[in-house]
Length: 466
Ligand SMILES: Cc1cc2nc3c(=O)[nH]c(=O)nc-3n(C[C@H](O)[C@H](O)[C@H](O)COP(=O)(O)OP(=O)(O)OC[C@H]3O[C@@H](n4cnc5c(N)ncnc54)[C@H](O)[C@@H]3O)c2cc1C
Image (cartoon, rainbow, N blue to C red):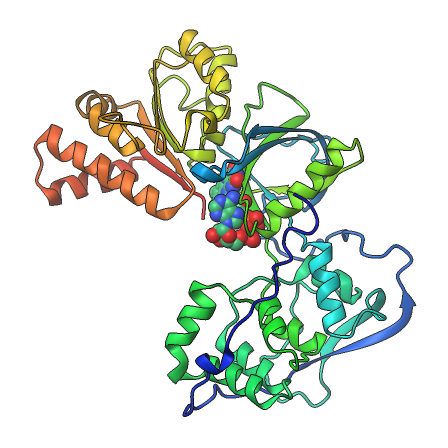
């Protein structure tokens, strides 16, 4: 864990194997931006900025902006296990005091502002010969006599920042390089073979290589700079071509009835090649463990129908979750348990996990089952089930098909599905459709219509973690 995880080992690649003999390189665009350095060295290098009121953030709730909150506690809920590909899962408790008066419901999400790993940024600065200027304030502007009418400095790059800050907070260094970007990189590459390689990847004729190297193998800027040692893009070029580093959503994993000034989020992290935000969260986790101050920049996201409010509380809920995506339902169940108006509705929870150890908060789930917060708890394990035991949540749903459809048909029932992948959600939908078809004796088209109808009535609600 920690600050070095995102530094990949240098890639060894035979670029000749990916260089075409005949191709037409993507059209080179004129560079529209330039960076002007001031004389000012930042006294406090690379502090997270106070975000500009005017800068728009995706799905930000009205009257909120990114705000620093303190991480009060961090608990590891699940340990990583390479044999079963189980991801490590961590729960963070945040102090909500700075987000004054935040009202939220179970199911709501918080956006976390990521920052790129400090070692990755240092490596990039060094690679671009920018180490000496790394903490000098600069600004980005249009080149004099810029001919492109639509050219503009990206709004998310502040009018005054250092190169280190620009790479740390504003640019997605791990984004998928577009063909125009590859062509622009080729233009700042002096070695003939490396230039031909980058040009080939950007060419129409290089579609297959683009597919295999960029889209499938996931080569991004950092690896391309490793492979092409003579490629020397300017800071201005990277500002022009790299996408914005965007906030990531995390589900609130508790009920507002549990705390007034705190909130929990739960994240899973890949063992190999962890993502940008989860790596950053892990660095914060280390700080908390060392009892140092750890802050996160967050904002509440706009609410949608994937919520458990007073309106849904008296009714029935069918909750379906796979892996870490159980997180929002922990909030739903705590809410049902703690609500003053006791619900007599049925709550059924279906959970799919890799192993028994990978189920979040098992004891808490058993407690909710024992105290009738949950009327039905079904759990299955994809890596350890044997024989006829169900492996996937889809199997659990199939098994309960008749009762499930019966409950779903009741007017107050809402089915909530949360999964960390579009494929899983789609497969769950197919299973529910199959159950409806079988139990209600519908043909395929009528079953499709039924799901559509359930969606439009707000009885089938999904959260897809992409
Ligand atoms: C509405 C919504 C709610 C969400 N709630 C949660 C939540 O409560 N908890 C949570 O952990 N995530 C949640 N996510 C996903 C979360 O927003 C991030 O996408 C995830 O944590 C990875 O972010 P990253 O910046 O570390 O990865 P990136 O740098 O964006 O990673 C690049 C790619 O690596 C892969 N990847 C990285 N990390 C993981 C991982 N842990 N598991 C699988 N693939 C991974 C993905 O393919 C990803 O596209 C939610 C997403 C949405 C849309």
